[in-house]
Length: 352
Image: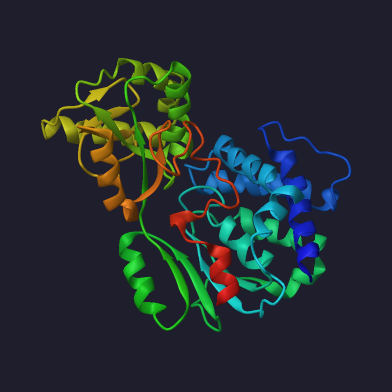
């Protein structure tokens, strides 16, 4: 298959996914192989939710909507026009996927196939229903991909390079296990927001999306705030309030109650509003239902400190403060060219 054919295949996948871009799934006309796949994918969404309590229909649909909007011919061409994909020697690339949010490994899957390689996927047990079904759809749309996609639950063998995502602990294992192969190894990262006290109501409401979407389980979720001395959190909590029904989700509520009890027994100072706690802490990774915060003395000093910590940070949310900042509310809407950990996946794949 040539590049244009691969782009067309993923464009068709985007059209298929557009039918699942809100919770009222709507079967559309002129979608290839729709009679064969539409009802089956509805069932896979149901299975994914039953298997993983964090994968609510709302969160799955949010992920599917983002991918349906990303997989347009214009976006795919804009992304790939920056690379020379004409002379890629086909290799087999292994992907070890995380399972913290729905389809979290899809960008790696897309990158490997769109660049002309074969892929062997080892999924997380927490997210094993959606991608194999979408891969099967791709194989119908583009039969040339049939020999390029493999899923396995066994030990990975026979691959030329690897992209692996996990915790800091598993990353050490990956680095040892894959030491003789070209690799991208991703570790824990978290996202932060810089507040000045001058944020509008709309900006703080948008920030709530960065905090609560996927229950805060993604590396692009804001888990830490940097605020000026004497910052008043009243407006911040007002901005968070429209997410108050999140406490009705049992798994989230259990985490909220547990972490609150731990903090109270440890006599930590915290502020909370019944569904979110904020605690002063220098760490970046906060527990579910908690956001850490830290005071800063000056923006310039903070920017210097964040540069030193860049290997621990995925996104910085701010308004006209830092280079490469993400707008309030946009952390969970990355473009195809927004690479995890700032590592250019396509460049890795065409030079392997």
